[in-house]
Image (cartoon, rainbow, N blue to C red; front, side):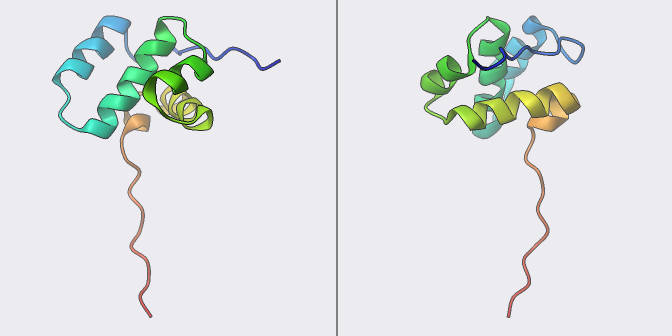
Length: 85
């Protein structure tokens, strides 16, 4: 049996995340914030994945990134441009 994932509350409170979710314009970040909100409410990663139509590993990755780096961890990671041949 897998260990239940917990949200690290030191970065933001539930109410702050909910307000950010309501004012956010970027759809990808909005989905990630919604996933964190569901984890705050006590949902499991499988339940969150089903609600958001994402894979379990994806929502787990969102939570791990949030727990490690806070709100900055949910933003897009810039990738260097690929070399053309």
